Length: 187
Image (cartoon, rainbow, N blue to C red):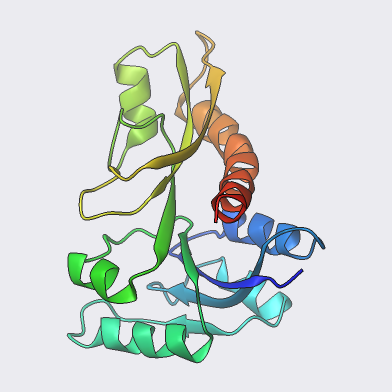
């Protein structure tokens, strides 16, 4: 199987990145992670890049030319898909247009509910009976692209924010790889 080259963008712990790295080692998984991009020099997830000998690029999103730096790296590694895995910056319309290929994001709610940040607290405040995660294509509107996969769980009355976060992350580890497989099965 010829695997497609993928770049994963992270900002934090990198648990979804680590899961995708493990899955990418499977013979029948359609992608190989060739590059990791982070906007946070202290992102814990960078340890997975180092442990697995995957090249990574640190970017300063406050610099005017940071997108140019990313494009140069994407081209260098022949990247055909970008996975946003806990990347806490909004991707610009210009970047989306110039990349011209698919960008997918994992979001910790059942979109279209609770777009943006602070999803777990909003789930509790709204007394939701279920929550979960969504993998979607990235477009110009925040958390509004075509949904590729969703997984959900029912919320217990005693669940706190951290309980919902843990349950959501468990589902993310299933949903993200499934969405990637679905993307390449449909091409």
